[in-house]
Length: 107
Image 1 (spheres, rainbow, N blue to C red):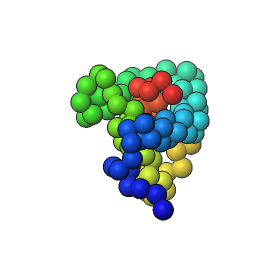
Image 2: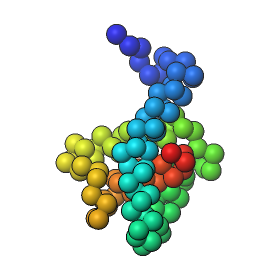
Image 3: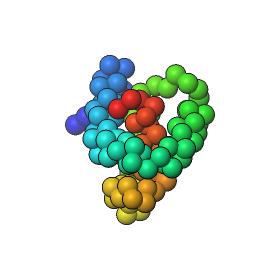
């Protein structure tokens, strides 16, 4: 049985966050950045999402643990609604939001 997230040490929370962000980089970041490179019209939308995340999480120095939690909540809600998060020919709001997390964390 594992301890609740709040009871974990800061180092363990950071490790879990990095693992989640690494997975996000693989599943969303790499294909998303390739799509943006091929479709420059997505760049402005991506920048807007990144700015909104910065604002909602409180500034320019973003905590990786907070970003990982934010991304997990968006990913889980998207998957529950049936979004497969993989059609970059018509990216959805959650896809762009998750790609913005990748951009902010350089993942």
